[in-house]
Length: 337
Image 1 (cartoon, rainbow, N blue to C red):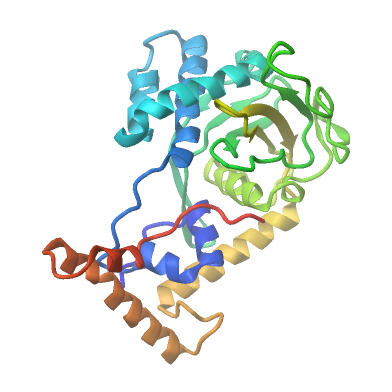
Image 2: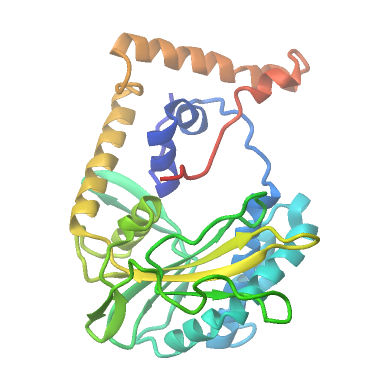
C-alpha cells in the first residue's frame, strides 16, 4: 500500500463517502486507469480559463504572464477529446457570467485590492501533522482590509434536470436578456436566509458557509489555512460565484449566477481538523476500513481490492476482458451534502 503525499478537499470527501474508491484511487500500488474527462467535468475548467485569462489581462496587461493566457489555461485543464465542445460551452458560460454584471463587480473589487490578486496557484502545508494541498481560484485583500478567498462553481450545465442555486446567496441574477426569455423568480434579490452583516466595512452574510454547502466550507477552509490563516479564524471572507444552470431546448442551458459571500465558523473548522486527523491516522496505520470492520477484516478487504486492481496490468497484454477493468475504475467528485 502506498502512502499519499497529501490530502486535498476532494480526497477527504471521497474518503468519507466511499473508502473503497479512495483505496483504489490513492493507496494501491497499481492504480486503475484514470477515467477520461467528460463534458460535465470540462465545463468548469473551460469557464475558469475564460474568466481567469480575462481578469488577469485586465489587471496586469495582456501577455504579462503566459501561463495565464487563455490557451495555456484551456489546454492544461481541458482534455483534448472535450476541447471542441468546451470551447463554445465555456464561452457561453462566461458571457452569461458577464451579463449578470458579476464579472464587472469582481473586477472593480480586484482593482481596489490592497495587494496584487493571486490566481490559480497550488498551496501546500500541514495542520496538526496532516499534509494538505489545495488550488484556490483567487485570493485578494478587499479595500476594507478583509482577506477574501473566491471560488467559481458551475453546476448543472450538462444535467437533464439542472441545478438550483444554493441557499444564502447575496444576489441572484439571470445571464440572459428579456429578448431571450422571461426573468426567473427572485431575480435581483437575496435569498431569504441572507442577513447582511457589516464586516469591517464589507457587507457579507451573517450566516456561515457550512449552512449553505458543507463541501464548499471544507474546501475553502483548507485553502485559507494553506494561505496562512489561523484554524478557526472567523475574519476570513469566503466568496463563491455559482453558475446554476437549467436545461433549455435546442441549445446551451439557461444560466443564473448566485453570488455568495460569508465566513466559515470556528466550530466547523475545528470539526474539519478532527476529520482530517482521523483520516490521516487511519491511512498511516493501514487500518483503512476501521469504521465498519475489524483490523483483520480490513486487511483482507485491502488485499482483495489490490488483487482486483491488478487486472488492469493483465488487460494491457490482452489477458482479460475490458469490461472487468471497468468495475474497478476510480470514481471522483464531491458527494452532495
